[in-house]
Length: 283
Image (cartoon, rainbow, N blue to C red; front, side, top):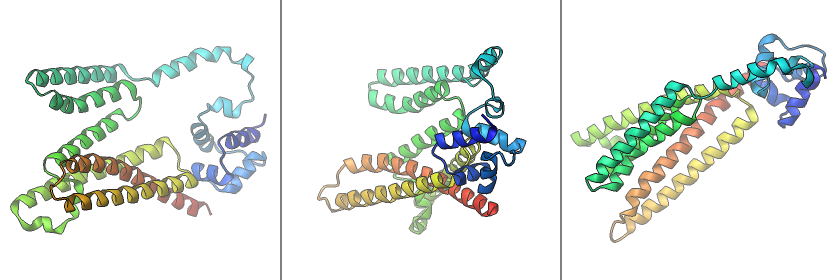
């Protein structure tokens, strides 16, 4: 099987058009067509990008090898797989976090407040599981967990969220000014984590215009739907004779969910812009 035939086969197995693959590799569609017909050969950097995109080794992509000629390569492959696993340091951190969560819950439970113990121990449990199970960007996902738990705690206790940063009336008193400062701090952390996440995902997964367009459209639609639901519930709570206590919990949890969807929407939008810029450069 020639290199062009392999590229054609890998592309079709993933239901990608020549344009999708061209966007992912930052080349023109005509280049993909020439490669698949063996009219030209990709440069080395494009071969490397292609091997990462299709999750195959360069040997499998370039060389026409049969299974009975590869026995000597089985051990190096096992070694590479082990290196991709969770490091011993990360496992140690995960175990320590789980132990801290258990000790914290037990201490607060002995004081008679089991529910508060569970709430305070939850971030340590989540970060511990991430450290034990996630191979890449574990620190980033732990930072997201900590941020989201802090945000939901502030929503429960004070009602402050990063959206307060865009409310001008918050400047009216010293207390509200303090709330504004906290809101801007939350917004800064949220924006930083979103940008870092987008960059990490872009590095691990090349952009494909069609997928980014569908993802951005779906996520922004979900954001509008959740916002509409939140407005309806808030209106019902405001019109109630007795303010419903459930609205406080709904507002905090639903706001958390809405922020997660909004973050994914921002990331897809960023990737879509990158894909459009690359497509414009290749045309």
